[in-house]
Every structure is written in C-alpha cells, then in structure tokens.
Image (cartoon, rainbow, N blue to C red; front, side):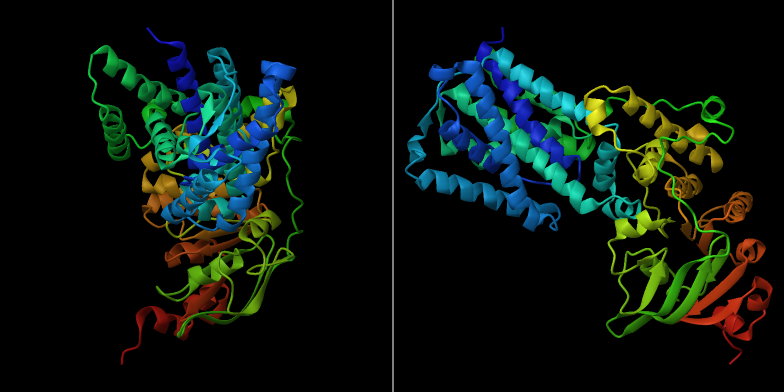
Length: 560
C-alpha cells in the first residue's frame, strides 16, 4: 500500500522531471535545474511569510510565486551567456552553475551551511498533485501550438527550424526559462515537504535523478515525466516489500533503464503512445472558407508584382581560407521567374543559395533579398521576409509526421495560440484548424495528403523530397529555393515534380532551382545561370546556355 510520503514524492519527482522535459523537448541538455531549485528553495524560505501567521496555504502560494520567479530569473542569468552552447558543452556549463550554487549555500552562514534550514511542513499529497496537474496541463496544452511545434522542430534540426522562420535563440531561451520556473516550483515544494532544506538536496545526484526520470519516462509526450517518476519512485517501495535491503538497487535499475532507453526506446516509456492529429477535409473546408479556400486566420504576405526584382546580388563572393567558393556573382531574380542554377559538382551552387537564404555570410559583396540584406540579417528574419527553401541533403523533422512537418513550415503564416489554448478560447481552436487545413492543402499540392500521418523518417526518399517542398510552400514564400529536389527520383517522379515547379512559377512565385538534371532544367526554366569554380560562365535562355562552348567544356572537358 502506498504511503502519503510515497504519493507526494511521485508528484515532486514528476515536477522536477518536467523541468528537464522542458529543455529536452527543445533539444537542450541542461543539468542546472538543481541549482535553480536550490536558489528558489532558499529564497522562498527567507522571503515568504510565516505559515503560522498567514496560514499554510497562503504562505505556500506566496512561496511558490517567489520560487518560480527566482528560478526563472536564475535561468535568464545563466541562459543568456550559454544559449550558444550545444550538447555536452551546455550540460557542463549548467552543471558548473548548479555546483557553484551548492558550494555557495554550503559555506554561507545565513543558509545554515551544511546543517540546512528548518522549514515548516505545509505540502500535502493533494497539494503536490494539484501543482503537478497544473504543470502537466501547461505542457499538454502548449504542445500542439505554434510555440510547441517550434520547440520540437528545434529539437529535430536547428538549421532547418531557423530556415522556416523560427527564432531559435529566443525559443531556446524560453524553454530554459520555463525549466527554471518549474525547477523553482520543485525546490519550494521540496523544502516545505521535508522540513529541512540543505545543500545536499540539490547536488549532482539530484540533477542526474531528474534527468534519468525525464528520459526514462519520455521526452516526446507530456505524460513521460509522470510515468518515469512513478516507476522510479516505486522501485524502493517494491524493494522494501520484498525484504531486500540493498541500497544499490534503485540507482542500478535507474542506470539500466537509461541505457535501455538510449539504445532501444529513444522516446522513453511514453514514446510508444501514438500522437493523434486529425487530417482535415480540405474540400469541405474550401466550401466554408470561400471560393479559394483561404482562411482569414492565416497571416499571408503581400507578394511583389510579377517581374519585380526580388533578389539582387552585387559582387557576391565567399572564401574558405584559400578556396574561392563563389567569386563576384552579379545576379537578379524576378518575381514569377523560374531560374535554373547549374554547374559541375563543387561549382559553388549550394554556397551561393546559402548566402541568399542567410545561412552563410558573404566574404564580400552584397545580397539584397526581398528588402533585407542576407548575411547581415539573422536567418529567421530572412525567412520572414519571404524566403523559403529545401536543402541538398534532406532536413526533415524525422520524428514528426508529414503533416506536422508542414505545420512547422507554416510557422510564419499561422497565429500564436498558446495563451488562448490555456484559457480554452474558441479563437485558438479556429486558428489551429486553419493551420491544419493550410498544411493539408500544401501536402495535397505535392500529392502527399495520403501520407499525412506517416513519420517523415518512414517515407521513401522521393516522398521526403516532395515533403520538403510542401513544408517550404507552407510559409507562403515570395522566393522558393529548391536545392536538387529531383535527386533520387525516377523519370516519372521527376516529370511530376517538373510540372509542379513550373506551376509554382506560373502562379507568380520566384523559384531558384539547383539541379543536375539538365534535361529537367531545359524543360521548365525561363533562364539558366551556370557556375564553374564559383564564377558565372554563362547566363540566358536554356537553349543558348546548353550550346555555349564554355558550358560544354565545364561539364565534359576538352579533347586535350
């Protein structure tokens, strides 16, 4: 039979695990939550009113508010200088912060040093589970929003997320601050549960326990921390019920489970729980949304008139040490134009489009793209100006479904609904339905609506390339960059893709196409630019370019 303390510690362990879940869901490995919890616990105990004076519940509510504020503030202070770190480097930096806090608390007189501080017991199992329910509610309701999808995209691939218009730095810091606030909740609840708060409560062991609980439970579904905490908290209870006194069993089981999860269950215990996402009926929605099926809930952009210059490159160059990847490229791309960019392998094509899309800064020269200067502007702002792209090597979000991938692509045109979803406002549901319908329509345009619920990493290579185009189209771009979209496709698939790309340009979209399939380029492009060793060697209509001796030499070489 479960005791009151066991029920309470299950809830507390889950709350602490949620602080790790918050950052793991955004692809961050942080071990600073124990430090956040320590700061929150000591601050609340010192500042909050005495429960004997104002009552247990009012005092605890004030302490929780103080703890969340202290934890979030500490997360901001730590996060601002460390958000550029990734992986193990971020883990080491945050662990150093937690250890610094522990040593400071251990040696300070006002904290009671190693003896700790006595705290009245206020938390009951009911209170602990109510707080856990509130925390779980936050993560449950935030997951299917634009904000939640952005965090998942960052976890899967930061580069692709930025190219979709997601401000990676701001979202990572937001997840870090959320982790600090939740860890602060845990620190306060722990202090008002165990009656004595000391430095040992928030040491390295506590941090590892929280991380293991979150990873064993699962980092892709919000119930994961609850499952992990329940399982790991019950291990000692089962051990005692069996009369086994060995203290090494729980850490051994925790470590073994972590190894099993890493090797065989990367999504944790909750990773097998299916994620349900309704695929909308786009035909019925078009009837309700007007003749063209457009939604006023979407923030569509105003596109440049056909023929206007959307890209102007002036002397654009990129050097990597002594290698001149791109040299003095002067180029204009017009709205409604389908421009082919061809050249031998290593000619600098991908480097050029990386500079146009803001992923790579030029060594010199200037790239004016839809009113912004690419290379001097963060990549998410270049995307916000109207640039969308695919990549030479597919950068889909593998663990997300095809429909979810396209929903992320629509980040710039969909409206934020997080606060409204928390309050259950009807407008949030309406906006989310519009986003789903928009994503489904983009999938239908590339002929992949039937695969909407299939995970991206389970699709064939050709379908993955088409899915990337659907995701790029979801941003309602003014300039679409396609980097070898027909790679790996058979002749039939390439022909269908060619018709799709041509139709996009006919709709007024500026398309920059990199492709090795010269036949496809000659078939659909209005103009072709040829690069060789980073320099433009030919430009003009496809038939003239194909007959240019310099182009023939670049591809086939000379007789000599």
